[in-house]
Image 1 (cartoon, rainbow, N blue to C red):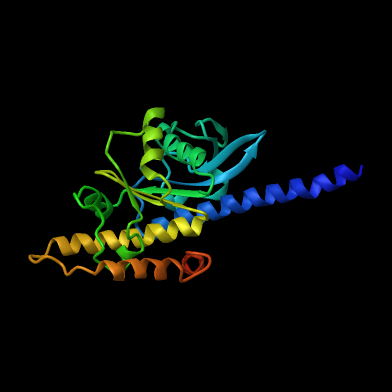
Image 2 (cartoon, rainbow, N blue to C red):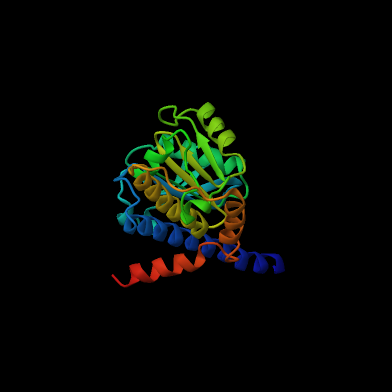
Length: 251
């Protein structure tokens, strides 16, 4: 009897935790839509979920929805092998499930994965040098960006393995000719990287349109700055997340 009483609060806490993840992920979709970094119905954000009968899962939106439409209730719960365990979908999203499932399986530290393809990110991903240290936004990622060669839609397990290999231990990846992917220990960390990556790419595209080569930032300054920027706050992205939440609540 004692064991049962102890188990009930634990189960309730687990349910509350999953509800909180759903709420936060739905908010992330709406924030990304507000920042105009979505691409109609073609990109996806996810958050790691708890186990279902011992099976690891993640949450993701149903393929075909706009980011601004996403609610906690509509989110799908998917196993890492791409089996939809909870929720209803109009079309099976093999590419989305392959990308997110493969990375969650390989990276236990990752709790959230955002995949987008803004025009600025696509443009920079196709440049030979990739993201260059030309702005303070870009210095968040100095020597911290992975690159993945374009190989059509990510639908096969071998493509998932290549994606995992190319990302390595980094949290930011430019997918050549395709877009970008950011990972975080929290949803707000993944969003923090996404925002600054977008700003960095926009700035680089604007600089590339100029007639003269931009001034370079010395290597020793880049190295010091990336440490300063990423060490500025203990919980990276939380302050910005709260600001975006207030902004959306005001509408």
